[in-house]
Length: 450
Image (cartoon, rainbow, N blue to C red; front, side, top):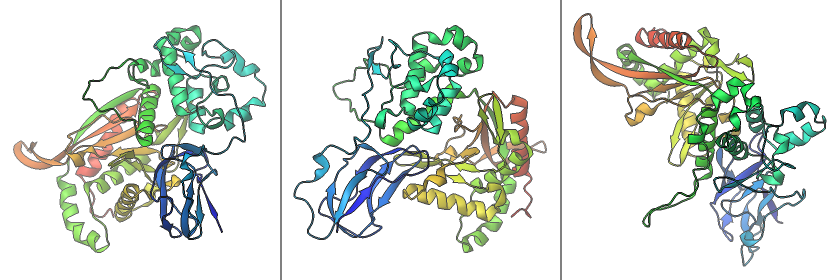
């Protein structure tokens, strides 16, 4: 008996997924729960297991194709049921909701993009927001994710006026970011409407230089190699540009003496290894940051329009570099874990990220992020805030340097820690107080803290 393989819903707000690659081919034997194909969504990349044992009889969605959740992407049949020709050549699934395709508009730069319905060019429709009938709100929600609606709200865009490039006309992050960037390029940011929204306009200044897609007309040399961005790389690009558009980034750098931490780490290393964990400097930094977040809750907050949300939970995201991109899994309730618990959580999340075993919940709900470019030898960096958070801590390489100790030159393990913060809600004095707490905790670590 044949078993349909469907695109799974990897989180409540996920409406579609992209087939990155098929691990099995038509005719291959598969066991139940054996990895069958890889997908990429707005939240996470993952390997999807086979729902049944048998033979891969048919593939309905090709690599690189984006399909809605719960649509059939393959069929598992009994032995000998494989079709002679893979159905990957057949067009993909559902046309249950026929919609008019987006109407491209000729841009001044030669690019084409989504345009406002019923209008010659895209525009802000603030007056229409209040007069539009209530029933359109449900349609808007069906055509966009919570993140897209948040971007539209912050930039005062009436999302119902956009034709999206996603499934069934759904407005994607790329659509909304392209709309905002194009508007600024045409000089609309200085309109009376934008002027009344000074904060939003200021947050978007300079977006022209970094907005996606790249400037048209780029010529490449005869020997250049051109390749499409991966799904993950495109999403990283979208998130980074969005963050630069949204937050007023400022950075503070502190130099920290890790001599005390190094002594305690050496003393506890064997104990942690017996417990199956490798104690690193990062574990101490996470604990110090968590304690500082408790003392200064503004750093553990988010911005929603003109409101500040103070998060009760302290959920720390840890940036993990992958061969194919970057992902930020989250240590939930980090303030409830001891040093061993934090160490185990970091190792578990990093391992599952690299083996593509993360679940959507593993990458959601973060309230503060730590990134550690120091493992690659970087002295410091100026990291971009992970939206919708308001701060991110960058960790530089811990290395021995000559320093002045009691008016004498000494050699100590030192590192630079950089706090990137959103100046809309965090002032420089507050950021420096936070970093002073982290520095004091690390340089005077209490060995009784476990």
